[in-house]
Length: 420
Ligand SMILES: *[C@@H]1O[C@H](CO)[C@@H](O)[C@H](O)[C@H]1NC(C)=O
Ligand SMILES: *[C@@H]1O[C@H](CO)[C@@H](O)[C@H](O)[C@H]1NC(C)=O
Ligand SMILES: *[C@@H]1O[C@H](CO)[C@@H](O)[C@H](O)[C@H]1NC(C)=O
Ligand SMILES: *[C@@H]1O[C@H](CO)[C@@H](O)[C@H](O)[C@H]1NC(C)=O
Ligand SMILES: *[C@@H]1O[C@H](CO)[C@@H](O)[C@H](O)[C@H]1NC(C)=O
Image: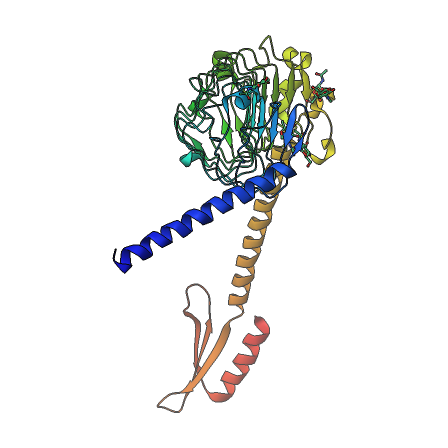
């Protein structure tokens, strides 16, 4: 055996020993620090670096809590069949998980709740088999993960056929591919606090969805919705929506809508046919905290019977006189387009002033010019004085020319000065 190959073997041995001691040390520490009750095995906040092997735990817990640790990998291979069968809730929130490998939850077909919130999972690294075999799962929480982009087939019914609630809030999501979410049994989807700008076509296929939260995103205009036939509650609060025109789309795609919330947006006005006021199921429309201008364009709201029959929250922001007032409690005489009339008055007034100012300036200039007359006296070859009187009028020519003896000339000048 050469010395070289010996040293290689030694290094390998050292590495192997270190690996073993790390695992056994961390496992020993883990299990003793975890708190057991009949139903729960709680390993929260004990500085775990990986999920411990709990194959020997008995009786089998139904809740496993690994939250608030430093776990970076979802490694659940050390679980025995007997244990996994009983686990209904698995909490790995507030850890350092960066990605989920395919079939990570293969053993957890009876799991009902999975909490992966507050980790570092990115959407592009989630494999399309990541949630495979979570056949009984009802609640999946992924809030506070930097998902950003969700690829096709990330959340599908073939993996999670029973999923009812999916929390993807606070995930910096900018885009979702078509088919990213395909969950026909999903009832509640939370996509609030993301960076979405358009209602994605990827929300199609959710025929059971009742509640959709899209608040705190970056929507500016809304006109088109995906087909969500059971949707009852749509939350679009705290976006920057300045234009909305959803009546047709709601009729076609969400004709079970009951509550529409548009609080905290940038709606200044609202056309009568922008919202499906006459939809039978519609109960509540919240338009609170928008910069609504209560002028002639909104007059229709006082007489529309469907609006009156709904629970509508709304208040005027302008004109100042009506600030804070509920437009539905104002008589239609208040809805004036005063502001445009005032603008016309101001423009006309300014034009008159401008006209007067220009006219005045021109006359003053003319008067000043008229004052610009002068005598120009010179002596000719014969010793006679020559005086030319000129006025700087528009024509700019001398108007008087006099030739005379010195004395006479002086008299004449004096006389002419008196005359003018
Ligand atoms: C836990 O289980 C033991 C034995 O199975 C039982 O006696 C005890 O009452 C249980 N405790 C609770 C809080 O359910
Ligand atoms: C586990 O313990 C933490 C406190 O350390 C507690 O907040 C949490 O609710 C417990 N988990 C369960 C499932 O009881
Ligand atoms: C499986 O769990 C049951 C009760 O939960 C227990 O009686 C049985 O001994 C366990 N089997 C193994 C192999 O741990
Ligand atoms: C983890 O999730 C379980 C199941 O939802 C829950 O009972 C527990 O309180 C959670 N742990 C913490 C620390 O919030
Ligand atoms: C009316 O709407 C407001 C705001 O959206 C809501 O808080 C309230 O519960 C609703 N009332 C009824 C009777 O639905």
